[in-house]
Each structure stands twice: as structure tokens, then as C-alpha cells.
Length: 72
Image 1 (spheres, rainbow, N blue to C red):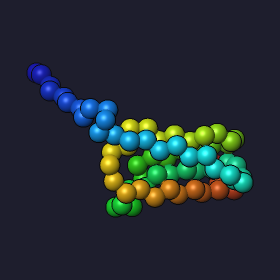
Image 2: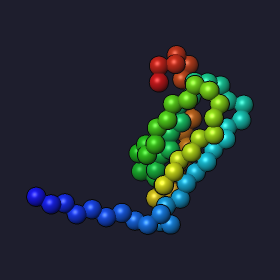
Image 3: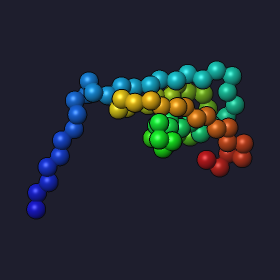
């Protein structure tokens, strides 16, 4: 049995870097595509710069959820 795989070149992708201000932790950060599907889902308990690497072209929304009970 054999498999063939291919990928796009790195220039076909973009990235997003986010530095939130005045936020309360813990946070759930989600990157959502135009269909409403969560593409990335990250959990943070302290301040950090948020990176979403190698994203395909499209329209995205950022969803920031304050996780009041800290259960992720």
C-alpha cells in the first residue's frame, strides 16, 4: 500500500498575531471561519502574545471568552 501527499508552499499561508489589552484570565481564544467553524481553540491562564500560524486565506472572526470558572 502506498500514499501520496502534497502541501501548499509556505507563501500560500498567512499568520495572525494578537496582543490583548485589559483582559482578565483565564481566557479561551477562538479563531472562527466565515462558516462559523472554530479553526483554532486556545486556552490561556496568563498574559501572552497569541499566534495563529499557517492560516489559509479567508475571512475570520476572533472570539474571546472569559472562562469564569476556569474549567477550559
